[in-house]
Amino acid sequence: MKKGNIKSFSYTKYEDNRPTEWKVVLGNISGTEVDRFDPTYEMEVTDETTLLFKGPVKYVSYDTSTRDLELSGGGVELLLAKYFTQFHPLTDESGVLLFENGTISAILTELLRGTDITLGTCDSIFTGTSTQNTFRFEHISRLDAIKQVADTYGAKFWITDDRKLYFSMNRGTATGKWFRCRPDDTSSNIRVLKKTVDYTKLVNTLEVLGNATGRYQLRGTAYSSDYADLYGIYEGSESKPEIVTQDVLDEYATNLVKILAPPIISIELTVPFDKTLNPGDTIKVTDEVSNINETFKIIQISVNKSSDGNITMNLSLSNNVGKFNRDFLELWTRLKILERTTLGSQMIIPFINILTGTSLTVNIYIPEDVVQAGILNIDKVIVDFIIASGTASLYVDGTAVTTALGGPWTSSQSGLLITNYVATIGLHTVELRNTTSNTMKMVVQLYASGRGV
Image (tube, rainbow, N blue to C red; front, side, top):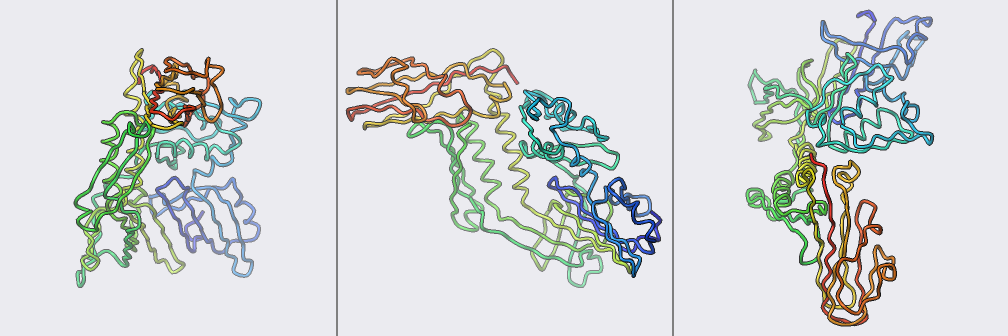
């Protein structure tokens, strides 16, 4: 497109896996030219030698009185939205595309098969076995499938203009750029600044509940004295039943309270146009009036060039590296859990409860990610219980299994095999019922082996 044809343009780029959005107004366009701007046409807008944005046309509006043509569309990522998983060569007869126990880089490569986009680079963690996983895609676009993979790990992906897809836990670079707003300072390069502080999600006193139940449940606590002194006590809790060791739970709680304790500060800036900035980049912002002097991450960039030639750039920033750190923390936790399984070894995960009464329950958790990926194999699940008197019966997820296991019982039992009743992933409830109220103890042991990480 000739430079003189562009009357105005605007575009917005996001850090959170949303495709770029753009709009261009072209002037002096004849009616015969309009039809060539269809979905096969990719708009490219450059500033001197730098490509500002590129992507397919999605909407066309032509004004015959002014001969202005308004085009809007999205980034290169939208090219993947027209391919659906049910048409992939590996899809089964029911239209399901299933990848079992695959590395993330291999799955991404397959999702790009048949398109003109190829895999660029992935973080090394996504090319090895530690993040192998199983994914099932059914009647969704390839773009949505890639988003599903990314969301599983809190990862970011983007497609460059040379048709390369990049997949990483973090996007952007530390630019070292400094934006300042000082009264009567000619070096100020901030035109407009708006600051928002969100105190609604503060947690500086945290308890995290891990595996098991009752008095034997793992509990991890963490406290941020600095933020408690500033804002007072704000308590919170979280459940992580997939964490089965105290050391991992304690470290998880310590890291999580660092994320939740500070308030979320959002900044909106209008600054001189800088074509080198990208979503995910970090910049320093100083404003004496608003008491700001820290580093922020760019989560959105919006640029507008008006018909008079003026270009404005708006940046949406956040100090809430909370969302980004939370993604890293969840991935770290998953890998820590996997580290507990070594090649050829067997681990025993006990779930215990003691209670005086006629009913005693134990909840057990079959972890989804590691089981589906084949990294952790559930070998068997057995129940032991102790009763002082009465007649006992056993239920799994509300279904009676007493007769099948040789009950009812009038004495303590060990080695009752319930593997077949807890074969599915997720949470299961094992209940011991007794005709007489007395002190009962039940231990449900999950025997699991790993193939290594």
